[in-house]
Image 1 (spheres, rainbow, N blue to C red):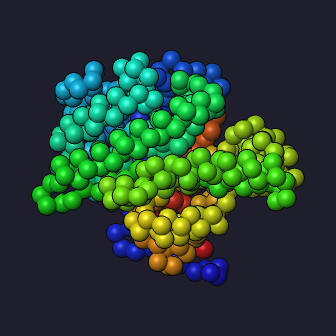
Image 2 (tube, rainbow, N blue to C red):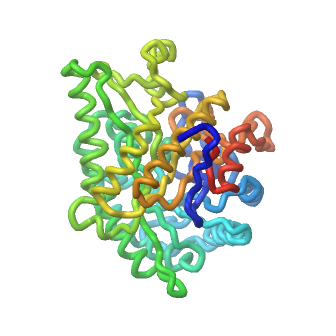
Length: 416
Ligand code: FCB
């Protein structure tokens, strides 16, 4: 690859952005409603995308994207287990989908993104196997209602992150700590729900001969030892890899379960290195100066590791032979040059993997907007558009990266 090269992507490649309901919509009744983040913020208004989605869709079109990955919030649609879908809320999502269609933007709908209806949580959340049939009932009804408008379905977003931060690290509701048994139960139940929901979608989501696509979004993080020869560093890295990568992939895609999915969604941010039991990343509170001294390149969350993207794509391709979407990649930083470099490096790695034969169908930038970043609140700036949270009108303003990404989307190519 030389300076001045143009890395062209295949025709029909999807260039999108991603959001999730709790992080952008506001006016939600789920386990996050009464959660206070580390910065004192909450998600009650967030970006008010619940009301401002027409404006946000105009932004998607202005950016030149041709795809949008967003979630439908389960707690809006069912007020009790097995209840009929709320028709007003369904109509709002229907309108959102119609507006996307009018702009030629392909939707990818996420069914579960770190949030549940209150009645699911009251019954023990996903530690309770009862959640499986409640979820599949919801999916069946939603697919029947939206199959004309949606053919790309993403069942669970990052089940590994959800189960880990909610049941091991205590960062997400219900803020349980070191409950390894609960972690494993949540993953197993979600995996069973994924397989059943995928079958429903593939059978019942066909519209006018068009077959739906379905998959999970797996967050892949590389876990490495800081000091190669330290047994503690290696042990921690291996334990994390085993628990969050191997166990989770096996649960969702191992054995015959692979056949339920038509694609794999990959959320890729980078890597975590361990010194003894300590994660050397900003998100765990490691001092920025120490990380710099070690020579680590980090955004405000994790270490960047673009070479890793090629490796994990090749691995997933070899192991599962399924098409892949990069369902999330992005960086949180107030330094737009840093973010632009990070995007270019990761897209170059993606292009390289595709040139090597990996079937990747699309890329979704996390995120369209600065938003409610879970336990961190509003301090992590992932948006292509800045949102002024001090102004009640929540105005959106494109950042420099929006311009750069827009060019990539429009040209279907990366200039290096
Ligand atoms: C992913 C989540 C997404 C957002 C980004 C930064 O783990 O899916 O909601 O928090 O990280």
